[in-house]
Image 1 (spheres, rainbow, N blue to C red):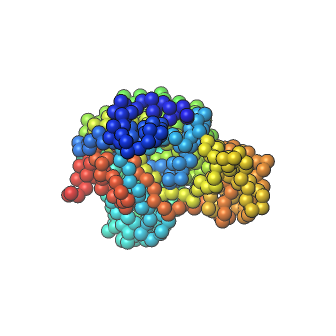
Image 2: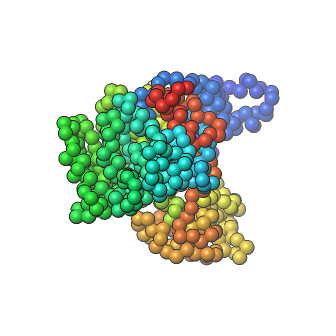
Image 3: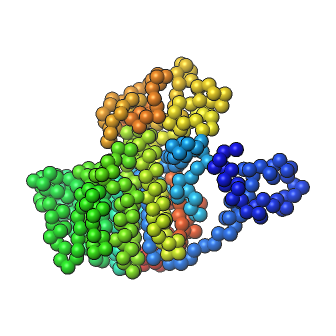
Length: 504
């Protein structure tokens, strides 16, 4: 028997081992089966669960960008296999949360969504168009006109600030990227991250400026991530044409103690106990994939999460924190499953960090994704077969296609296609798109630089349109269940934390 299963069964209670309710109804071989007893134990545990109807003092929303169901499955298997297990029986940290639901992700104008629209839905309770941040569905992408003011939406982060709570935004992507931007900004175009792409007409403000000048409540307490180039002037190595926003942010401190950090050493040495506002911009663009991260230069997502909590928990009124695992999405766009899945592991570690540093009594933790990817698990590999490997069947023979070529368990519906590269960073554009099957016989498909095959050659792999999942624990988590629209996530947060965003 698998050691993991054996340990779970060993923990089964006496009540679980007792099968008196089914005595005579099922054969002993069934009742004594380890899987049967484990299932009985889990059902018993669920019957003892009670609803937590407390008001959520704190809310943490985790968003695994591009973390669809197939990504969860492959990530949990790889996580176990990296530890020496078969992998299939494992769980990511949040997969044992008591409440789950499936989430429909479409935008109002796209069947397969983008992150600007999906995160706007989660943060405001209103679905909108792809590429548009913080504006209702009538706003048109790229149009900075009088309709912008009339279509503005209010986010959960802003409601939290108005309630006197501390707020924070953490991401491994640029902090001005679509998902984090939807927590604090309003923009007709997700690409307006700095002032260089703003249209000459209209009065729209770039996303980085909106973060630095955010004035609701007493302002955002913590912002940690990448994207330094959108805050710095050209003279200081950035892209901005007007001014250096990091210098402005420090100059505008007033009576507050503000700390600005650009690497892990500075973050580790920051006096958080005496810091009112913390800004960390660790890279010019996106932060590194977890597989490529230099621990001396860039903090992990878990470390950024813990740091954010250290600052936010000082507020007696509670806090709202959004944490994004932004590079799961980028790994998939590159057709590079290894980096996507190991970033999902780093994301799960961050969730565990939040669990370890908060109370279930007063903190609602929600873990979800914004959309899925065209990433699939296929073939008939035997149990325990390397999830990134070639398909080996239960008779220990390597599976082949109609032309006698081996194929991998995971792959993509579209994208760059096969590449055997040992490169770092976001290399989705480094190789030409490849159409047709490749001979993988002599190729190590489990290496971190391997790019899985794709059916349809494209310059970049696309998002997918199927449902994603939401997992929740803490006050109000029982409000998740069934199949829901993505904008309902806002309404759960609003109701659970009593943010005054409407009457229920």
